[in-house]
Amino acid sequence: MDQVTLRSATELADALPYLMGYRPSDSAVLVALHGEHSRFGGRLRLALPEDPREWPAMADQLAECLVRNSIRRRGRPDAMVLFLSRDPRDAERPSDVMERLRPLAQHIRIACGALDVPVVEALCVSGGRWWSYCRPAAAVPEQGTALAPPGRSVMAAATAYAGLPAPRPMLDIEARLKPPQPRNREHEIALDAACAELVPRMLDGDTCERVRQRTLAKARAALERFRAAPRADDPTRADRQDDRLLDDHEAAAMILGLQDRTTRDRVSEWTAPEQADAALRLWRALARRCAGPYADHAATMLALAGWVAWSSGDEAEARIALGLSLDLEPHCGYARLLHYAVCEGLDPELLRSRLRQDRRQRVVGSATARRGPAGSAGRGPGRHSPGGRRARTRR
Image (cartoon, rainbow, N blue to C red; front, side, top):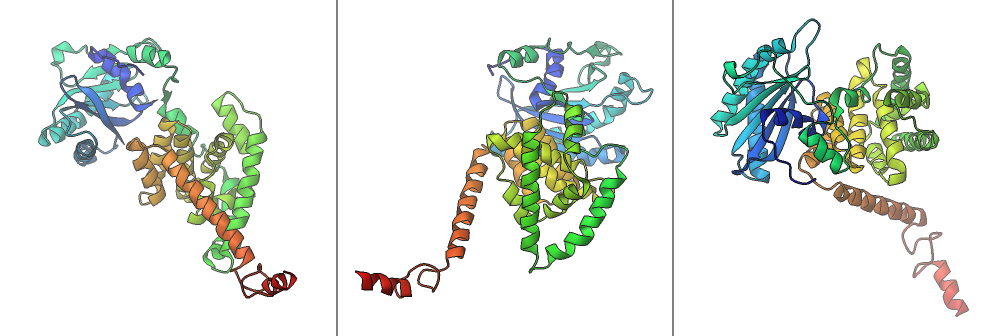
């Protein structure tokens, strides 16, 4: 995309979804600015804590993480821009949201100031309107300023000109990755049965490999089923169709089997163009079945969905899926590595090439194991094998 200059707070507020790649909700977004022209640098989003007592710690974490990461990548920021995004709830007015979040904005401004990086603008975006916390109250309309209609802002025009898709609402992306409400009891019953059957076998060194092979076979069959199914244009209808492609017990067996790291790493290879779309739909569908006591089992499915989305060029869904995965399992090394790579702007081809290399080594190793070491009886003619003696006799 060509360089875009934002000349007002209204244009800055309208730019938030384009800076993130999606329309954030219930979020604090801090964006680093660099140089005399205030070029956008790193950005960091954290969910808004419901308890105001958590706001000071959250403010310190947000400021410290962004400054530290910016120093590592592009140098110390010269300034920051803050966005607080939350829509009204129940009978709440957008202006009420703005006032309720004012102390949080102040905590974040103080935290950034303590690191010698001033917040030059702090905006609250709520109910299609925006307010500035940095301007005198008399200069800010009580009811805020309306955002530009969809597709009418400077950033929207630049995005359309570049042929890029419009940002989707964060809540819409999350809805495709989370279990629906109310919970489906049949899914939980199937997971109970799969736990009783598979967990003891996965922990047994003599049977764990058979569980891996069975899980991979089920996942491959499901992948082919998703590839063959017609696509629906509407996301909600498409997800319902995908859900119907999975049997409860089959899905439960895959969810449990994919908790094994080796199995998870094998299916991570499914990012080729002819596989990626079906794989992403499959991982989403499995994540939607992890509810109630099995909610944390979705961490693996979400990490896989994030990896495929990132590999396919959808950085917005990748960030959201990996963030949800880390919310469920903060110490998941697989999700943390992927999240770091996405945030650092690395090329997913680096990981794809490593996966291809691992696959080649595994195939070669498997073939060698079937043949056996050179020179052993029955596994190819070695130097001292009977086959070798027969060959010399014929010569």
